[in-house]
Image 1 (cartoon, rainbow, N blue to C red):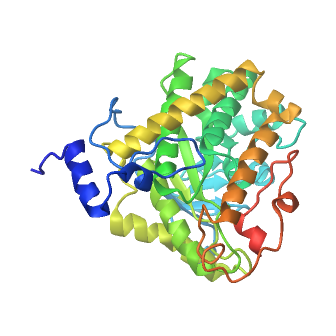
Image 2: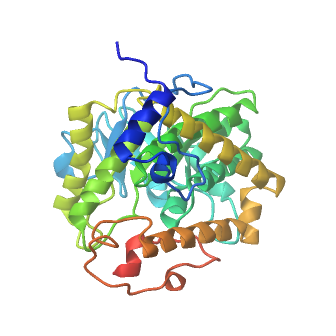
Length: 388
């Protein structure tokens, strides 16, 4: 058994090592999410139960290539491929959804979001009805990967995902909650991203209970483009490995790796990107656990902070008329814009560090934040673009 270490014991030890009584000013670290992070945890006030996922084992998703067909069991499809057998297939675009040949030996999921991303603030009801008529396990995607890649904070991503789901219930009824798949991009703040996935499980279950249900969200997690650089593809590999690990530990049902090469990508770079998942799954076996982060005082604490902050934002959105109404008014776009500018400022000042970009950089700044962002548009912006 490990010896129980009290807070005072830990403080005394660290004071000796740092040679100061003022240890908290040294160890405290500011973050853009407004989350309180302590340097030491010896308990959690409200321990969480195990947060399950839908899939027994996380699906490792590859972009389809014929030479991967024999050894890969989950594919992201952009075009119809016949004679696939016993595969998990994620349909990526609406044209394919209309024409794909359904095989009863495969499982099908839609990654098609029926919300507009512009100020029209519309839900494509006709497309939604067509997707719901398909023999898919999950028919409609609530995509907030764009929000993360545009610079949205974690509580914004979670709050917007809930608000989009709520808007869908008003169009299609509460049963739609059983047919949704949530698409998240996972960024580089390792423990925060684990907590993000876990917090959404709490939030979605809470939302479903408002409708008399007890649902678990199906979560499709992909690596972020936000923190990737054109000039440092090898560093991108390291970043995306950590992101995949966070997604699996957080309990995502499926993971996908975007190509680590931002430019000049090819079949080999796509294969290497996918094999990051294989190494994590078969060397660490983290894809088989429901909730590998459960029991960590730190992760439990920040999970609950994110859940509380995001639920508060969700209620504010609902009070203002819902996600679509806030898109029409430009509120969603402006909220993301303000946070993205602050994050870019931290990169510019070196408070957030990207190796090869603003730490040991190869190039000077080439663009301003004003060149990159717009308060009227949700668009993907990589943090490294300022220096490329």
